[in-house]
Image (cartoon, rainbow, N blue to C red; front, side, top):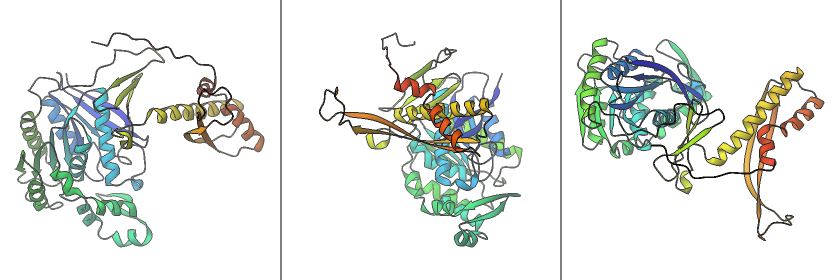
Length: 414
């Protein structure tokens, strides 16, 4: 029996994005990620209908709300096209870590431009489909033409789109204008399907022609005769799903076979147990703890793909979150008016001039620095006491106390 699961996953800024995973009643023929249209949500008719129809044809499909839209965290005013692309990469990484490789990307309208821009950053993508997509993300600015002067003059403006009001910041406009989109389309290393209505009044058919001309083979074009931009008629979204499922199987796995997936964890992890499994690339890892999963990596400057936090990022995160939790618990117990804690951490290696026992003359010591900002009407005595308590959080004690790390070889999971 097919299922539709509500899930969340973190984007690169630590905000939780709301998503829905559509799964068929048999192992998926392939996994896909669907990116919705500008200012829409994962539950807009086109996204939900196409995703469910693909599910009914044997695909597993993840659709999600971009930052600040639908049920996802964040403020839409702080987003732009580049952040949407980053959200899309985060969605693909989550799907890869928890289910399987997303081999198919599908994007509607500006979501179509986003999947084209993101495809090169998502390993394993072999097919990309766009629906009513612009050939240049800056085309969106024509929807804002009556408000652009206000944005340029004031730095932001509140606009109305599809009956809803949104605040647009100047950085959103500047980001769209800076996109070098043609190179991403020309460099696409995947089969491309362009679906577009000849009567689309929001994004003209000329954009489909431009995309088709930019892309290399294999590429295909299908006209959505009579469809509007949002695919509001059910028969149009059903037609899109029909075409997509037949076309995609030519470039993905054989029908009925499951795609290569990240190694599966055991049915349950013991409380407190964490599992780390290497993925493709020199540094990429999937990390699992309980029902949570995320990606760890190294920055591009040292040969990684920068697709997740580094091990030291995670070490600092452990210290920072434990400190904040400990202070919140202590203040609650005391009845103190602590409204929130912000922790800013750094890791450095400094010369250890006074280290008498250091075997090396140029020895260095690791220094973890944390700046604490305590929010709320606390007096000086309360603030001083909370600083003392911060040194007593369990992770702090583990890092500063005597430690032993036991490493042993075990058989790899089959």
